[in-house]
Amino acid sequence: MSALDQLTDWPVSNCAAAVVGLGGVLTTFGDQQHRYELASVTKPLAALATLVAVEEEAVSLDEALTDPALAGILPGATLRHLLAHASGIAPDRRERAATPGTRRIYSNAGFDVIGELVSSATGLAFADYLHEAVFAPLHMTATLHGSTAKDGIGSVADLTRVLTELLAPSGLVHPSTLQAATTVQFPNLRGVLPGYGVQDHNDWGLGFEIRADKNPHWTSARNSPATYGHFGRSGTMIWVDPQARLGLVALADRDFDEWSIEAWPLLSDAVLDEFS
Image (cartoon, rainbow, N blue to C red):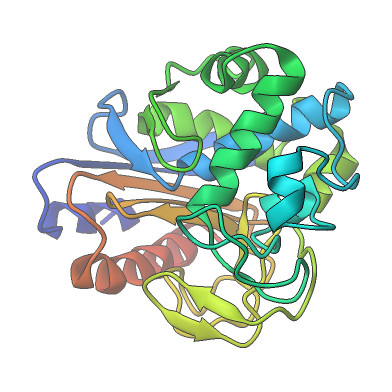
């Protein structure tokens, strides 16, 4: 029995998944081309595009934001703060909720600001820049229709290409940039992990959540602390475990709820059992 066979018991209308290793896709389940609303799995894709813009010197990770509207509510905040949910911006409003670098506040508003900063600097709508910077080089058919934070649409086939790039980089971004994106930025910040409550160390990279010692969590307790990824409210998730040298993507058409809180760690356990 394959680790992914348990998806046949998921209480959803449609789902698909794939496991990725250093050499590419190891096994799949379901229609790999079926397109799903990615919800917040959009964020790491947007973050990768933003890091391409950083490497092109269109934007800076560490210069204070100069837009007067932003500087007024986020004095001293940088793009690095925004990508790491450490800017102090409120979850869904352009209001200051904390001093930059003092709390981990998961913010859709912050990612929408990121999209606007990149668009202003490059002269392209963020959706177009995302296509040119990430989707086209990785031969993805995914699209963005709306918010930088949550309005991506894509397939398992699309996301396996992202996981393959993360596990065995081909040059989308420099290795040092990828290392920063997938390791903890602004360590030891306390904050709420959506769906799982307050975490004393709510660790985050640049657009990627870092598993660290979080408990409870949507990955397996057996995933290494270095595991990074993201999940979406629409019932989507991706993770990469650099210690196991594995990646997992699972997409469904039922919103995150008790079913996924139970199912995702069990799936992760089965993947680790079979492939590591």
